[in-house]
Image (cartoon, rainbow, N blue to C red):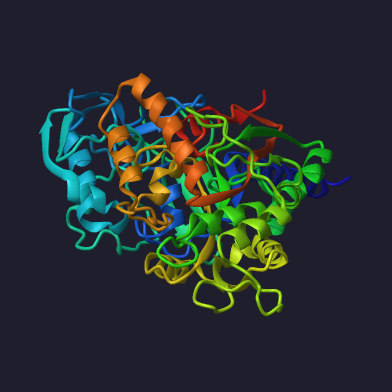
Length: 527
């Protein structure tokens, strides 16, 4: 073999070695990215104004408070807080040694600015603007004074991401501001890029983070058009886990993901549920006898079987599931079409012309407008079938989310299907009161109950921290729901979260599941 041939072989080996090294580096780079699939779609690069981006940005811009895996409220950006005896003055002590991703220290001024900004600029946070009367910053101490007691403020502050004042104070309309990034954050990661074309948001490790160092440099959250696509992406190994706010991994895909042998699952009872809401301003929905009749027309076990594939159970009339503190046992929802028909007749709703539909007190057929968002079509068809069997006509009107928000707030419907989230069940005066209290605002709430008895009960809860009183109020709330049925739960359920077996350190809390700081700083490849 000639020297020239030897030289060629050496060069070839060197090239192969270099290529192998590049490939190894590439693989390592890919392995250093945590990938999460979801169906929560980001529709706009609006850090605050886009609902889904507002869920994701907790990673980069931590709220003051968080919930641990047992449902206890603990500090996040804040170390701890103090409350005045009359529950109107709240002081939060901001943790030291926290830095924004541009190297600037996190201060009490950032916190004060953020909370005031939400109250002034974000419609869903209008209650802050209406009740916050004074804000005082003293070093790392921020004191908020409100014009009325609010014992649930620590929970509310698990949902408002804190922003850097030195960046956002110059933005005229924060709720409408859009940018694909990067956004300055103070969490273990900051939001680097919102890529609507690729369908993903990309978080990078915060170079100024002083806490537990994450094992991953990058977190990518990719959204898919439907649950099947998201499940296939996970099962194929392209994703490490699945997360959808206040929702389970698709029940129909659980057996397949388990049988792959590559994933373990977390299964936890949740306070999230789908429920039937009533426009209490319209007849005959304003009649408790009519609502009671509807409650007996629904086949709850069939709902459980179809909607949760057995990962759920028939709910109680008290609405609140056992997953919540303060749960009180009330009678189970009962499916009995004959009872439903009798209750309708007793209440004066009869089918006098024999066309299969009962007439209202005005003599016209009762045909209810069932307003839904597109995601609830399956449950809506079942409800239509159930109600028509007992003589109640139903017309389904399916709309996009923004239209639903508008029609719902204008009370342009009779019935609607919507859901609760764990945070929503706890907000306002706890125990789902935020969904029904007529004084509460927000995209997901119905604000249909203006009964003074219910409003006074909410105010009583909000004005005390006495645990004995709160336990009694929890029971009163659930008994009120059972007696008055402002909403009917269709099923209670468990949430399933699959995760890559090759990754350890997963941590789940009742509010945001695995999407929390504990998970992002503790997950790492199995050694």
